Length: 219
Image 1: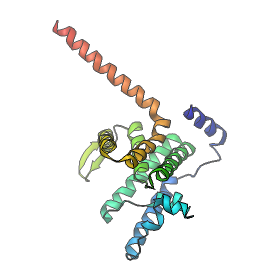
Image 2: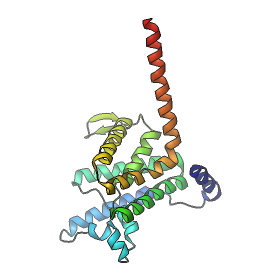
Image 3: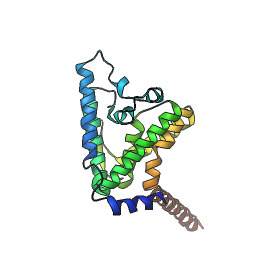
Image 4: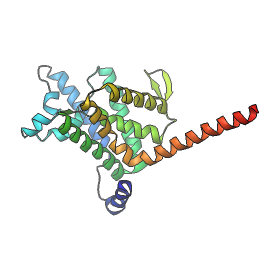
């Protein structure tokens, strides 16, 4: 139902609405925050940007936007790799879906993270960025990336690994983690849930057919 509603909106407003190159702006913002933290090490910039229910209730409403610009807290080498990968994934999705649909996907995910923060007390963009990766892996499962810069691996295997980690975190995490995980996948299931379930059904049918074929051959 929601997917059909999105298609109607795209048909009606798609040509005039949406931020073209949205992921480029997000990545530039992340890079600026990371550089700012290096230049001003005595100031915890993240504390002014992060998504916090307590701070939102104090009137710091800018956090519903600025949390999107929090870069991964990692080394310079990995931040370059991470931001490039975010840009690559976001651009690929925008080219596949169009600007309007990609914007809707991204901002539904952002809205879901805000709701998660209001429920659990805090939130961040890591799960949102993972939802982008899951969408990319669903659309381009055989795309190959260089893990650790020298190990070739298809993104579908990385996505399955991330999904397994999600399951482990959901089982052993507290209720706030579970809430964030469930809501972070909202945009994915709205856009790609039907395709995912069809793929699972087809996989199950292929496995059953192979089992039946082997069983008939043994008779």
